[in-house]
Image (cartoon, rainbow, N blue to C red; front, side, top):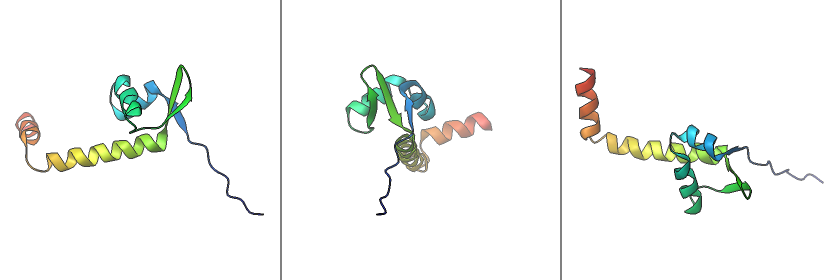
Length: 83
């Protein structure tokens, strides 16, 4: 009988999740309440899956990169500061 074991998620507390994504802890809680992130843990101790956080960060970066590629004000400001 060969059963595949389900690997439990690697989870971190709210503060570390926020630090990993560069957002305030309130944003992590808001995303969880809106269904963008799965909340693990027990009452008073929320935890979030690292893989899910990284996937969300990648999706956010991809969306921001697509907006920045249009040559909008963000790029113009960065060019003016560096030149």
